[in-house]
Structure formats: C-alpha cells, structure tokens
Length: 121
Image 1 (cartoon, helix red, strand yellow):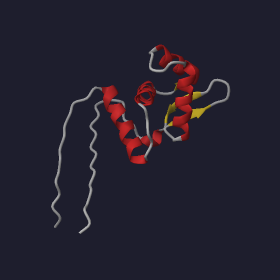
Image 2 (cartoon, rainbow, N blue to C red):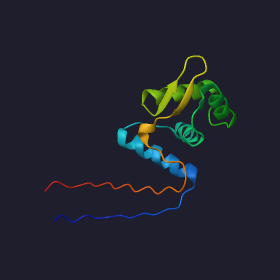
Image 3 (cartoon, rainbow, N blue to C red):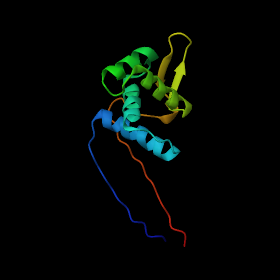
C-alpha cells in the first residue's frame, strides 16, 4: 500500500473570498490565467448574479478596479471565450457566471477539494 503525505488545512472565509477561491481553483485546474482584477470582476459577477452588461461594466469601473468600462468589457469577452461567463442578448446583453463551473454563493458553504499526486514506482 502506498504511503501518502496528507495536508489538512481549514480556514473560515468571508463569502467574497470563498467565491474567489472557487473561481481561482477552476481556472487553475483548466489552465486559465487570470489577473487579480479579472478574478475580482468574476467574483463580483458571481455574487451579484445575472445582470445587464453595460451597467455591470460601469459598476466595476466606478469601483476603480479597471481604468475604463471598455476594459471591463474586454475582461468579460475574454471570460466568455474561456467559458467562464455566459453572454446573451442583442442590444441590452445580459451576463452571468457559467453554471458549469458550479460556483456556490448562497447559504453556508463548505468546500471539500481533494487532490492527489502519486509518484510512479
């Protein structure tokens, strides 16, 4: 039987941080690189839920996370190409976090990830 070195870590996180961690873990496992601002943007979208693209871009710009609303749009477009965000509509587009990521944001949240690395013998 193989000997496994196990590390258990426990932390109590606020809702924003736990949502951020879920998105970051998904992106790490799928090889998607995000900047800190992009991660913050996606976390805010996950927490706030579906909304109109233009108003979300203005809100992110007003929070001084991005230099312009256009930069937020570019971030959302990049996230859509990476299947992190769903965008729908023609004139007043609606955006939301892709449900396939299974980001939990409501109620009490316990994340139970298990990762294993086996050495070849």
